[in-house]
Length: 75
Image 1 (spheres, one colour):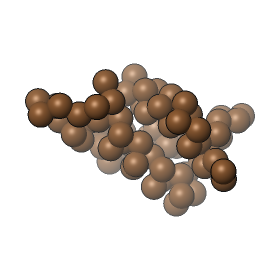
Image 2: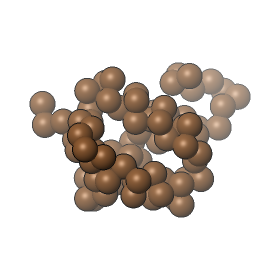
Image 3: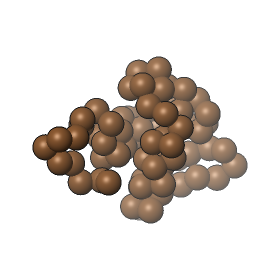
């Protein structure tokens, strides 16, 4: 679920992790595997949560995924 509740750990919320993901993309981490490893190392997330975050950012038209590379949408 994307909306935080008072019982949820905000460190594992897709909105918060999405902000971290955007920050890493702006720093130049564009490969999807490198991005996952960076988030796993710094925020201790699993692959399912990573896919949820990437899907959320893609559906919100914030990122563009092409050939295992993620870039920010310039719109």
